Length: 485
Image 1 (cartoon, helix red, strand yellow):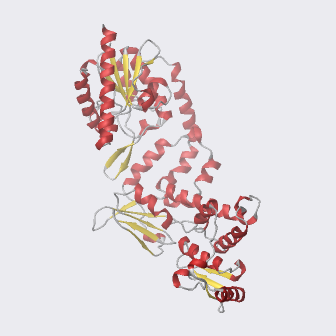
Image 2: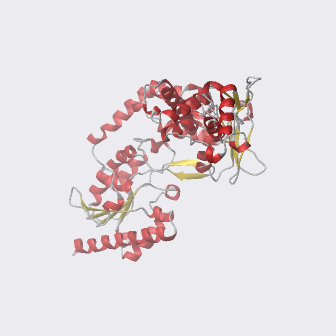
Image 3: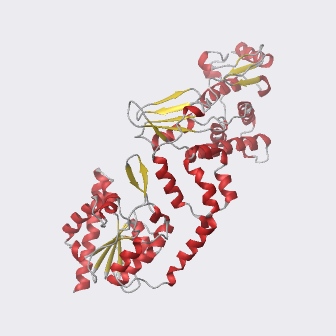
């Protein structure tokens, strides 16, 4: 045993080691080799870390590796290697940085932690600050990849295939593959970069070597629709050019179809902002006197970005004086096509539960908090997008106009967006359901989930939420009976 330790000490003191990394982002390999070097008492100034394609000292020997039986001390006699949780968290990201000195820096910090386990707590320490800078830079680069990758459709023998081009500053491509696998699980896609490419076929992820910008497509027919949507949601009132450029540097613009619109949108921002201010003065305008007038007015409304998506305004329907007013979130795809509220799958499910509860839909007034369908295009499908709080609040003016004409005694809000449209703040469905909320004018607000929520569930979760939904409708029916008595 003593001879083995003496041999380890002599080797570590007299040799200079080199570690050839198989890939520039292989943190697991670095960790295994660094652990072996620490256990051999090899100080940082005796180790060189070389990435693929790099050169090293001709007289250096490959660093110790327990997996390759190079560590001269048996596993049971090797000393433990200590590393704080904070170090490991930062090191995983720092290892993806493009700084060629990063692995040497991380090993130096790991070496120091063996004698001072609190070394990472010193915020003024040069090594600690540098590791934090590397971590921050890599996280920012990953954020840019998540935000600015734009897929374009290309022709493929296997059907639809989407390709994106991105130019990362660091070795982040493989580390972020799982994000795109989750987000675009049902698409066949490729992300091409100068640092390597990843490809997903819906089941398997594979990698390939670096690509060139010319390997990626220039555009597809969907981009015109996307640019129209981007222009409609561009908010001049919140425009700060400096902050926008800091968050979305111009280096990414060439890969983003909407970027060509930005100079014109900035130039017209002042005029659009003035238009929004003028629209905000509608509180001083007189409300429409009839439901027909409201229907005509919302068809011409452009007070929020959703109205510019090219969809029709869907008016509520039901008799004036209806004791019950049912409010949903917004029209869906089928409601936009037909021009009537709650005619799609969620509406059909609502009708079923209303009938079970003994509520006649034809005697209720049914409408939505937001009058236009907000969506994003996914291939040939229009996928529902939840309206923002500002959009709900803008459309509240029309909802209040409907309430003034209908004068319901009980209002049933289907979902949090509908509740916000009625009381001006976000509520928790689980906390608000089952208890009436008094409104100005004497009406009561009852809150439940949206039927579309039930459509997204299955199994025990669906059964539980369906029972709660049914109970809420029965409670509303009982309250209506009391009000009418």
